[in-house]
Image 1 (tube, rainbow, N blue to C red):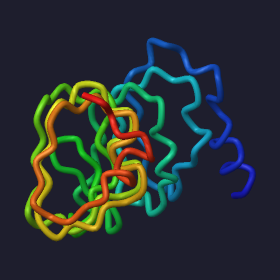
Image 2: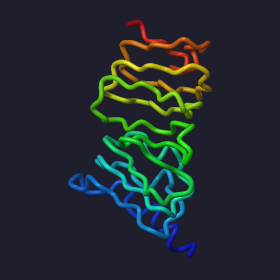
Image 3: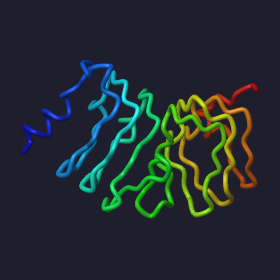
Image 4: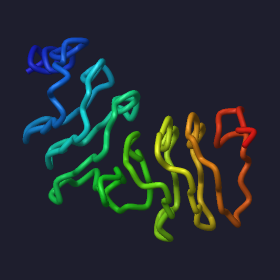
Length: 166
């Protein structure tokens, strides 16, 4: 079993064909590791019911439009291609190339994960709900033009110490 996990971890490293845009993580896979998709052009990832651990940095630098999760997964869920924990109280990852220009954090979300919106390209406006716990660098590298919030947040942590000038 260890050999299969090691093989899967490095299977595509720097050699994923650019024509491969959708990845289906099949039943039986428990972990999705950071080096799995290095150098890929993946736009959609479909996670099976058995995935119980995702290194959230796995999705960095991928032109993702959608992260979909099986309804039978006990750890993760997705709404409109956005990755959440199962109970949808923690927003874990907003896909980098999702085309929406506006996103309103649902009221039932109580936390935004570290780097959840990192390097998102098309999002111009975000509306943050009250009483959110916001992870480090949650908005790092975004192209946001407007943030609406009524809570007490420290913007320095949202942008990784680099608050945009515009």
